[in-house]
Structure formats: C-alpha cells, structure tokens
Image (cartoon, rainbow, N blue to C red; front, side, top):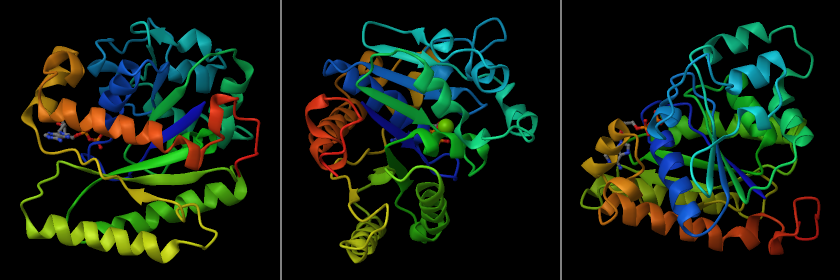
Length: 279
Ligand SMILES: Nc1ncnc2c1ncn2[C@@H]1O[C@H](COP(=O)(O)OP(=O)(O)O)[C@@H](O)[C@H]1O
Ligand SMILES: [Mg+2]
C-alpha cells in the first residue's frame, strides 16, 4: 500500500484537483483507492458528490472523538472510497492542543483498522499545521502540486523543511516522490525556466540523504483546462465529466507515472508495507 500526501501550504495550486483526478485515474486502472480529505473546506468531499455534514462520520469524528477509521470510510464506487471532511475540522487543531501524540492520531487510527487499499491519497489543507503534520506522519510519499510561477522555489523551501522535520522525528520512511506542475502552459518561457530550476534543485540533492534526494519533476504536467474547473460543480471527476479532455489525459498520464515508479519509492511486489527489503 502506498500512502501519498498531496501537499503545498499555498492554496489554489491544484492539490484537490490533483487528488480527485489522480485518484479516479488510479481507480480506472483497477487500483483500490481511498481518498482522505484533510481540508476543512471539504472541496474533495464535495467534488465526489458527498455533502459534508455532521450527520455523517467524518475525519473530525476520527481525529477528535476517537471513532474508528473504517466508520468514516464512505464507498464512492467499486474502487474508490472517501473519508470526508467537515467544517468542524477547522477546530480540530485547537481541540487537540492538549492531546499527547496529536501529530500521529491519523496514523494510529489507520493502524487499528482492517482495510484493503492499494493507494491512500491525502488532500492536505493549505497550511503546515497539525492536519498536514498528521498527513505527513502517515504518508510514505509526498507529491507537491505546484504552479510554474516566478519564485516558485521560494515556497518549496519551507515545505521541504517541514517534511524533513517530520521524517527525522516521526516518520523516517517519508520521501518526496516528486513535484507535479499544475495549470501548466508549455508555451511560456517562464514555465520552461521554472522546470529547469526545479530540475537542477532536485539534481543537487541526489546522493545526499534528504527526503527529496530521489524526487523528480513528473513528466506528466497538468495543463490548464477549463473542464477541470467545471467538473467539481457537477460532483464529478474529470474522467466522468469530460473523459476526452486534456485534463483527463493529463491525470491518466500522471497515474501511469505514479504506478510505474512504485518500485523506486515503495517496497515492490505489493507484499505490504512491512518489508523493508527495497530500502
Ligand atoms: N489544470 C487546471 N486548469 C484549470 N483550472 C484548474 C486546474 N487545476 C485547478 N484548477 C482550478 O483552480 C482552483 C484551485 O485548485 P484546487 O485544486 O482547489 O487547489 P488547492 O487544493 O491547492 O487549493 C480551482 O477552482 C480549480 O478548479
Ligand atoms: Mg484544496
């Protein structure tokens, strides 16, 4: 099982869009996928047609009230399950302040549950707070969705610092799988400059013992595509809403790249995550 956190403390960079549609594309390939919505804005939840409400068991109930992980897992279709967020989750960081081991609650709850997923995708909120730390403590990999903006690397430094801290203190197996460029426009000179800058940054880490030493800039880029912005309001993924769009093609390509890299970042052969043989 691979547990991937989609993380960037900046809002509006495409975390949720990537989580929704990468999840759908992995499921289309026959993978069993569980999506966890860690953002109190609940966009992932809504995008999958689930109304965030107090009536249903959500991540809040799991983190704050000790409900079991499986109680909060809602089946969306044959291959996709979802743990919804709710607006209450915004208060969780404060409500958990006095709780011992609060950085690892999600990990603990998941360990206690019998589950059967190939991929768990964690849609992080736009902050480096407790919810994101819970995602990083649980994850085996991080994917950083990012726009090819001027000074793009500046924001990444703080993010990587947080990942390194969590990997040292709580989760030594955590690695950065890569950076995925979102809302990409290959025509602009700036986009290509940013790609070159990211590549040389990653190269400079190779051979060092840093969580991003084996990272890559995914060659699948998510192009700007209006269909990706439209599909959430229909409660649909891009694969349902407009399967022939660029947005669908790009997420399918990303899913293939993620599947194919599995030998590099996680124990190969699907023998479970206890085997450290590949490390
Ligand atoms: N490739 C894309 N093309 C066009 N619009 C996009 C694309 N990716 C994301 N968007 C839109 O940009 C906004 C922010 O994306 P979102 O995935 O919600 O970011 P985040 O989760 O990082 O805050 C949303 O309105 C989304 O529909
Ligand atoms: Mg989001």
